[in-house]
Image (cartoon, rainbow, N blue to C red; front, side, top):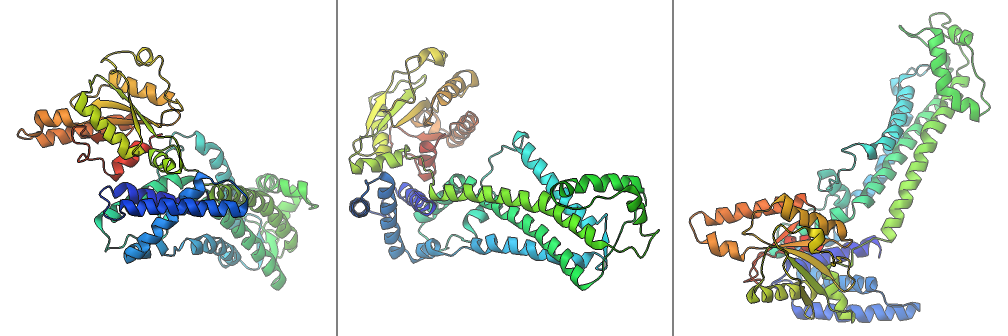
Length: 491
């Protein structure tokens, strides 16, 4: 599906996940959206002579639900239909670069070509530094950090769009979850567009500088020369020879000798003319070292952005989509649970079954494996276990909040399962036992909160965010929208 369709689908997923109490969308609303989407997808496919795809169904269903939401909630309609300032930004920045380059002559002498022109040397030097930075950046320790929830990435993804004030709490929670999820999903697309714009702006800035050089040359007589307190003619000759070497090699431009450079020192020959020769050298150098590489980089980024925008990838193996796939006759989802040092009794087994239904649909099945003993080597305990089994929709490791997480035991199991899984692994932490033991005591709630924070930090460190559930009361447990998204999006 394309970017807009994926954005609608992710938004609807956030709304349905947050609306567990059906305050925004009733079960009839959701069934009607699914039926209508199926019919519309089949009609469009038959009209085009193609097969119905799950992407088409998701797109049509998202459109049906968003239409209903905009009719019921005017504030949401304003958010959903708000125009972004991003189109102006993507266009204005390159034009600003072009104009800035054209007015470069305002900070230089309009009647001479300085062989050591600071603005022109700065343009070339900065761009060469950028190319070097692009080559070494991925290899730097901080170059691979994946920070998506920053102010500038949020602005690049959403523009000046803000959440309306008068929104139902559930809908406000859904929109916040959507913005977080979309920032993560669209990061590479946003960065590709930013790279395309910045490279194009740099190229147009250099074009503007060249236009400025030639434009002034038609209206005034250039005097070429140089001056320096610390450099002599030989050093200036070596510097300019290296700088103009690509231009002289590619274009039919004349070189220069040390004697010519010495003769062009402003103190020796104040009336030196012949500026056109040096204008051509600088223009050709800017074209080869700045304009051409930047245009190639911009074209590459534009191609990537266009490909990703047309084929926006969503992980359709997540439980939310598996649950919807069932409405099209797909196989029922399977939740496989790996308890660690934790015996699941009948009541908690029933709670896991209800949790599987909430995540994967009414026909979902629970596959509860025998518990792994405390201290067992994960490689031995899971010797015959395959986390990528095609019959399993989601694999979850189950811990008890009453246990204290240990790197050499709980952490070793998480590291092993996460490393083996290509689909992602969820972590369930049952709070029922610990709540029953300390929850009612003085300061018990604080101890529970501290233990939850400890488990959350521990699981995040091992690359598997935790979801906290009360298996004795799964319907009233804190499986909110943020938890459920974390459960289904672990990678």
